[in-house]
Image 1 (cartoon, one colour):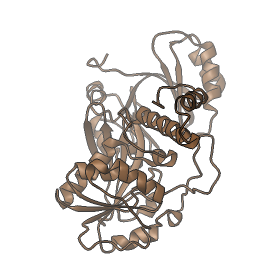
Image 2: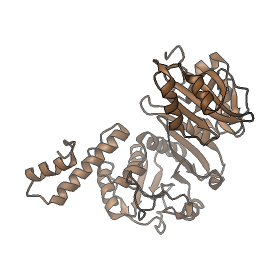
Image 3: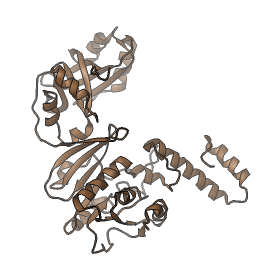
Image 4: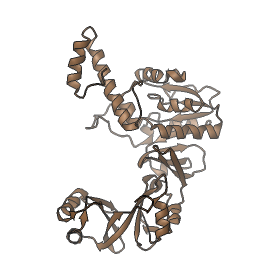
Amino acid sequence: MARGYADPLAAVTSLRKQFGQLDPNLISQALSQAQLQLRLESRWGQSASHLLLTDGGISQATRPEVAKFRASLISNQFGPNAHVLDMTCGLGFDSRAFAEAGLRVSAIEIDPEVAAMATHNLAACGIKVEVADATSFQIPPDVDVIFVDPARRNPKAPKNAQGQTKRIFNPQLWSPSWDVIAEISSHLPVFAKVAPGVDKEFIGTWDATWISCDGDLVECLITSSGSGQRSALILDSAKKQSRTIPGSGQTRTEPLGKYLVIPDAALIRASALTQIADEISGGLVNEHIAWLTSSNVLAVSEFADLEPALGMVLEIEKRIKYSDKVLVESVKGIPAAGITIMTRGMQLDVEAIRKSLIKVKSPGNSELVVAIYRDEAGPQALICRRYLSAAKS
């Protein structure tokens, strides 16, 4: 019932009139839960009406498609009856995915209130979350693999406008710290969820998979295999499709062609661009910039049709030596429904550039994309349109 109100103040007033016999704090808590459920539903696209939630728990929650992938990975690697210990259970979303994959699950959570919520959320899976600190917890002898999602925000720090506290970038200050995680990995396999911007040097010989879901770079999964492999996983939740691209290190460069390809961010983080270059019969625009180029119409068309999409394809209409004045003159009178500015290797006021171009363009039906970057000849600008293959146009 608390979910049927658009205005929180009106909701509190109405609910207190209807349920005056209840503690006002209970009504406020019910309204807060309803708002959190709606927030999670808008993020995940599925019902959350049965879940108990916290603001911080939603911020760190794994997307269902990603949690399912991780559970499948563990099941395939350690067997469908493997025992997983979730050492940072939170609200229980990862534990639920493990259980739904048929894995045996134990879960601990340091915060008693969050642990109680997780036990409620996991009731259908038969999992009771134990209140315990991962840094001192005695791991049961029959556990096959550890999953850990260390807290990477300081709960005592001031909150920003989005209600979030400051991120912790030093792994030794995570909870549990990297030292604790590394010690556990010396005698048990560990799967750790970390931020996608994690320092690659820090990962060392752990395997790392950067995960993109529906075009958003959401996390990096690191595992203690010791082989040092790098890869990117691209997920499309609507079409239930996925593709893994291996990291490849150095990728060749090519002269600027007819098309510009902006790879998915997971591919860039994983240094997984060589296979993309091969698929489009092209290469990097610049060895320091993760944009690719090609003039092969057939290869680019096939790439643009791939599902899940591995990147955005642009057709280059004009190349100019960049300056604000030259760019404005070049765009003047070009028909466009809107303008998007993309930059690499340069610090620019993107919004100011976009506004200056909006003023001089003509009305049109398709978006104009301006890609600005720096090469050995200096700042360059590419005036482009989004490319649609015959199959998608």
